[in-house]
Length: 255
Image 1 (tube, one colour):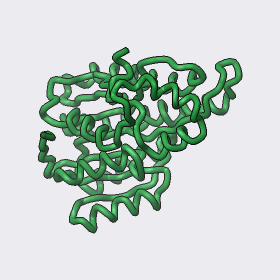
Image 2 (spheres, rainbow, N blue to C red; image 1 turned 90 degrees about the horizontal axis):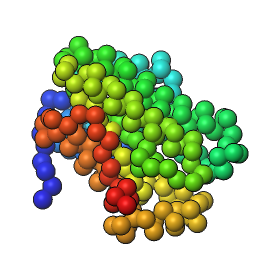
Image 3 (cartoon, rainbow, N blue to C red; image 1 turned 60 degrees about the vertical axis):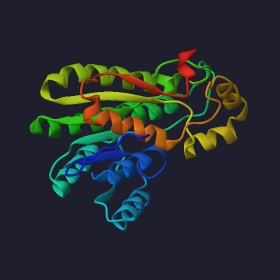
Image 4 (spheres, helix red, strand yellow; image 1 turned 45 degrees about the horizontal axis):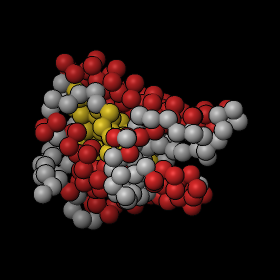
């Protein structure tokens, strides 16, 4: 039986919310009563996703945001508060991949871009979410790392560096803000059935086949399974959970 939550009267912000894990999590928040801001680099897609929720009677707002740009991240949080009055929960999910590359051949521009979005993007969002939450004296933030934040794999040095960095950022901020009523954790998805992974399966079939061999559960995860983990981490059921990097990976990191 799935747990049930009631987030009525609370406000959630989700980045990378136009598809995949972000969209599934935004829908999950909305369906248990939260007002939700769906942010994405693709503003029309975010707005369309938000409209599908408002058409269903939910409170939702779609906004455009490049999380690597601190001014845009600040404006995203400000608009959230202007629209709904507060910010209780955030899932900092926006992220990108880069092609697998021999570590001696990785291009500086690929390293800079993946870290700009995956690490700096988490930093910008968390920074401005914390500024609002500390005025309230409450809040819960979940940052999206990856199984790539917990292990190393060949030809993924830059991507894994960004995801390891998310865990360090999360843990340090978590211990700083725990006594102020704000809980910060990370979720570490495994290989999840999302548009990004679908592209990897198509373009990197051989490498992905090797990864799937190490998937004890024998299947891809679903975006909804990540949403379930995020909602739990944001809920009172996880009130004593602070600074964790929670694998949701079908057993991959249990080897």
